[in-house]
Image (cartoon, rainbow, N blue to C red; front, side, top):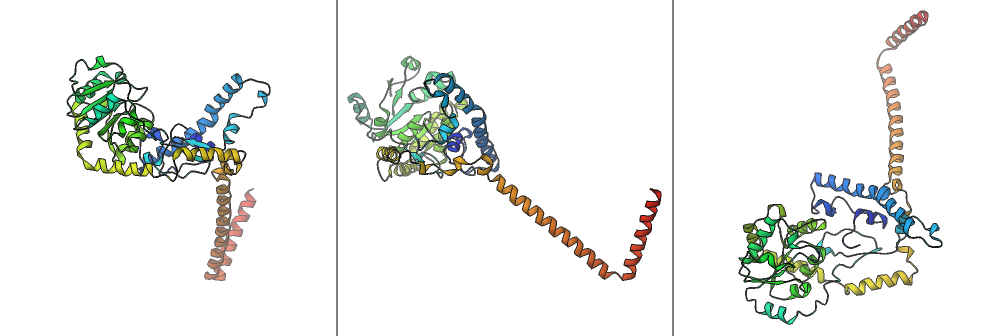
Length: 383
């Protein structure tokens, strides 16, 4: 899994995310959810599983059978069965950059594998960063996203603000001509930077990012607070997390302007709480019993040594959905309780009638019986 354990993979690996405090990434909320947020979380989780089982995986299975043809391919199990037979699931995730959730032993986290051994900076980068007395602000929207993807007013707000900062700015920019209308004496433009090495430098004080999961890991590992401008997908969730735990600020792309960018930068850099919180998160990230790579290799080899390690596969994967949700058990108890209540009600009704007959005189009881008999005879004659 490239990031997080989404509902369908969780379901197919026999895991279940506790919906009361495990927010779905697409809903952009934290682990302290309101009632309405929990309602949305519940619906989104099960919709993802049901749609995945009934539609998505069926389409994937059809593609597999159409294109993966070889002698014996006609005996391939369904893609659902193949996925449920998986021994080990590796997730590019770390609880230092997310919320804790309980997971079975068949799920191993390897988040942070990209930040160990940051490497050396090129000589020109090293010189620039060493001589930045006021500190460095590193700006990058990652490998795929570019500033040119932004609306013109957002580009204007960001580039204009960067040129007015007293700090040296390392700007990842594929098209330097975008800066021609802005002050850029403090800006160093490159089409690529060794990101982890830049963030590892002690003079790097702030990271302005789109909120990609790997950039977030690198920033937390190297204890660099952030200003996040999310574009899409999990970036909004990551930005919300950054803001929630106090390691940076989130800026909404739709409402951004120059003053807001300048205010966010100064606030994160001048408020010592952001530095304290990012140092705490960095310590959590680095506190591992063994190096992440060694941990992952151990579990891969463990599965090989134990011939697929079927003992890691939880029995929940062999249950029907109604058994997993305990609906048959709930139905049994509901029926049992219903029968017991009916019996108790019947007994109480008989007991109350006996008490009434005892309280009233026998004469009254007899007169009532005679009256009932006469009424019955009249009805019989009419019939």
